[in-house]
Image (cartoon, rainbow, N blue to C red; front, side):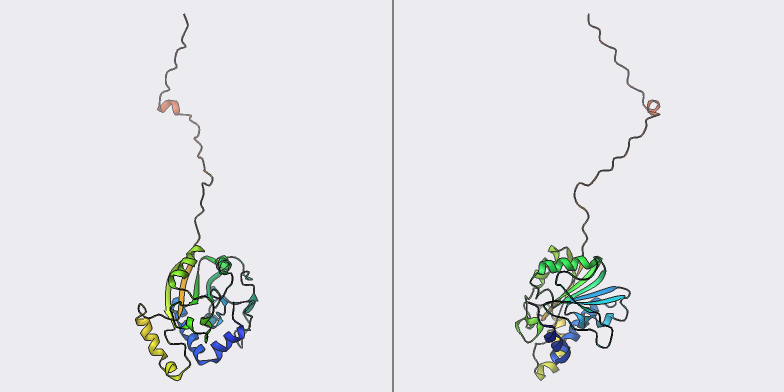
Length: 254
């Protein structure tokens, strides 16, 4: 079940923990996608906190918010680019998105199969998508104080297998939010230390959020197809290059 848009807004924009989480996840996304000049960038779920860096140079930025969640105007003080939509029927033409971000969308969806099909539909050939989901082994998926404590958490293997079944090719993955999901002053002050430690020892420590980048894989047409037969042509000079075999004499009956 999707969370309410008011709860998501209050967490990311009005709480210290939420602003810290927003900064860390957005920083990792910018490391994966430094720019999107002249491209169409879309976000589904509650991905708008991650889209602000692309407002200046992208050709178009769209914030898609599912009906069960609700919608809010975004960005503040600028023309609105967010839209309320059906979870599996987005108001975007097929193949028109270059970069797509899905956050608080896949793990809370009641129809993840259809949602991934819709992601595949709107992406252009070679388009890229980043899925931001709660990590199954992380602390953030075990606490309902944050939006990452709701829905189905994923391991890396589970998410990559699901993406491959829907013709996505996983390319890169990162973990972030190694800091505990606590509002206590000690953990807030030491958050940068835990993030640096986790990034350095990510093979041992587990981040609270998993980010997987994948590309749209377009299959070659399969099946026998139609054979294109090349005509043999007229054998005008055939008798000059190879003598014709002698004609057999008819056999006479005695």
